[in-house]
Image 1 (cartoon, protein in one colour):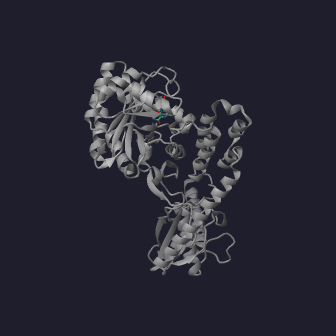
Image 2 (image 1 turned 120 degrees about the vertical axis):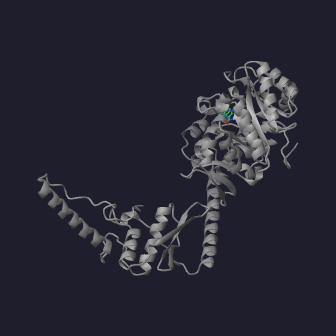
Image 3 (image 1 turned 90 degrees about the vertical axis):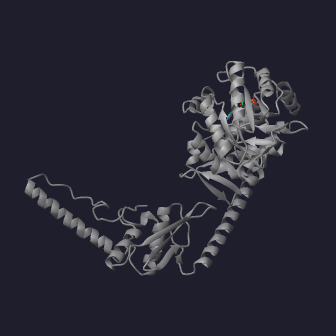
Length: 490
Ligand code: FNR
């Protein structure tokens, strides 16, 4: 099927379903290794995604969508770019479109989840709550179809009556979606209830777009050959698998299932290689181990509190050390390269390998304050800080310009504030000025000014009290605002 010049074939395919906590990069790659044609990521909520920025992670060779507090919400890589469908949770067409635009160049398609019956999804009008608001469904889907150049799909559950279900899917079809995934259960039905293959069949016969049949794990799908049987029973174009793939991702392998021990080792290797959060890795491994959680290995996994401990439980300790060392070496090489490029680009910047350590300064004094104070005293323009963040490791570096000269630290920092303080120290040190550090022999003019101001304020208070006859105050604690210096505490 050709959709806006891009091909994502939903016909006769096996698909790793979107699964919260399971559908992260390591599981998707493993499913592709074993023959899945298309992989869905776990459902990601539009509001969360809209906080993210896109970062190219050169160490891992991935593209990361990262929150302001540095949490990776969606990680993907070149290998799956033409295979991964991004599933979102949304109840708002404009927000959905904004997310789709943010990720569309990194994925093969975009799906909207309309089947999640969990309260966290439905209370925001998302997931299965959308099923009772077809106008909203239409708005979201047609906005996406018009607004992006990748195939758009949606995943629904069936409605209480066949008639309503068919009306809904026909309406969905008219929005121009490329395919529709149907989990053949009603929203109040749980996985132990039988999947309604007859309803999926009726849907497949009622629409002309591909229908992806879902809901067959356990009862219908246990091994690869069951996929085709389920497809035929539902007359669908393709089959989407969730739980059976979570229990053993080699379900997609034509030649049959591989032993779990081998699968878990391969999964862990991807998890370490792509720096998956250990808690997520642990969750997925527990789903694979299931009945074996009480074995010695299961107990070790249960106790693991880091990726390294997970690796140890599976005798992959050496692999872990080697992979971590390999990634660290790559990060170091990239850092040096980036540094050399920068130095070549701007040889006029004065650099020193300096880090700001807050513990070396009195509580209310920082190098930035000292520098500002000195500029004021010398009647120079205020220092100007320009900070950049390096994509490779998301560290910061700041260049401060004072009197047309530029200064920066050769070392990168975890935050913008630290980077600015480091740049200020380089400047102060280059100019031979006091840095305001505890135990500095040369007294910083700022310290001096602070003491004078403190004395004056104290006098004012005493005068006020004498006039008002009030009780004496404790010695005032001078705040940053009172000495009129921009608050820039680290
Ligand atoms: C799910 N399911 C699900 N569906 C979805 O559209 N987005 C999601 O993020 C999730 N998350 C999720 C997590 C876990 C742990 C499970 C078990 C299931 C539902 C899933 O995609 C599928 O519709 C059902 O599990 C039925 O398919 P199977 O399991 O019978 O193949």
